[in-house]
Length: 485
Image (tube, rainbow, N blue to C red; front, side, top):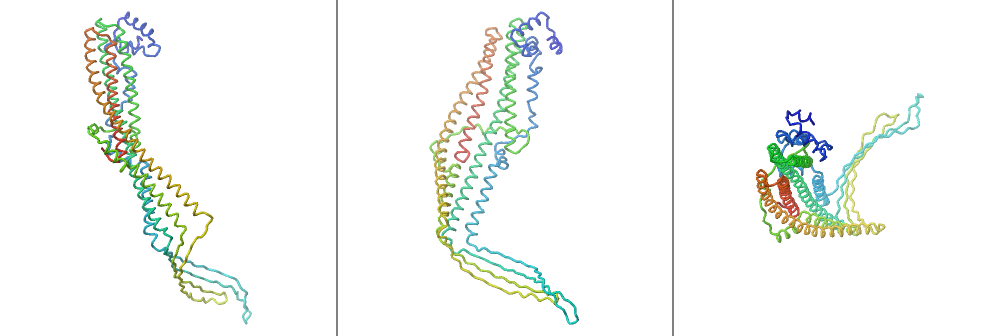
């Protein structure tokens, strides 16, 4: 204990120092490793929180504001759409649906054209021949062949399958577009909530820092009154405990801020931590017509539009599956050339290629009369998928309506909470000012001061929480109706 005091150049009477040590031992602070902190703060005006281990921890957790890049809400939403997998997958689904529509609406009415060519070299052995002079000549034979041609086929009638496939493809493309819009709004909601988490964590840190400053000032007053003989050591010790509590709350707020900013950085695709930039436009009042919002949400909600378009695509796929009961008529044609030459071992002069043209035109009728109930199985599967999609679309409408009621209720409650907490902060500040003045005059106790101080700390935290509860409810409402308010 003596070494702790002497290290900071303090001069404390030995008797008062011994009394403080005994008091700290009785309260249990010495056993908790905080004896030096309590004695330091209680007995010396210069022993403030900046010299404590808690203050050092706060300093380590406090980031350099200039070193952290800031991002606005609009920029965060834009960057999150570029890097988040859910939006990337939705964009990929749109491209796939567009390709399917192009194939079903244009490609299905164009002929299939194929070009092929081939060549071969074939050798076969044979009997040797003998000339008049007795010379033996091998009788092997080499054949070179070449084939080339172009073929085309065109479906003249497909049992109405092409029309059904085109309608199903267009419905799928509409569903993919709606799903992309819904994915963007859902990602915007996630990004907005994470952004507000970081912003509220910043303001909570500011509120906790204000609480630490008030605790430090109160500790100064308590120490000064103790030295003047107008207060007891209990006042300075209680002020020290209050300062330690405020510092712990500040450390927790710093950890929450680091976590929120790291999550925001991950969403926008940046390393480390990203700071949320505040904007006065967030706190503008909002006037809402609940009846118009309910009608707009049911008609234009991205979630409802996506589910409705998916149900239409499933119904179109079922109709396309029924086209298998009809026959198909296909027109085909081909044009080709083929030729070969032969070289005999006993006659090394080769025959020249003789390319022979060939042409073919065909008209093929195909009608599957029975295929082991495979058509019926496909139709049953598509019908079940359509029923499920229709049920999901109806449930999406009910879900949006329920979510709208909940979001409006949360918005109203948060608006009332903001007004109440702002009033509480003003009242708590005035109450603390009055109680502190009474304490200086000796008309109130340290318990009254510390109670008022804690009430103000909590009121400042409550106003931050209420403010961002309102903003989160507003963001939820915007995601439901598919537009900013």
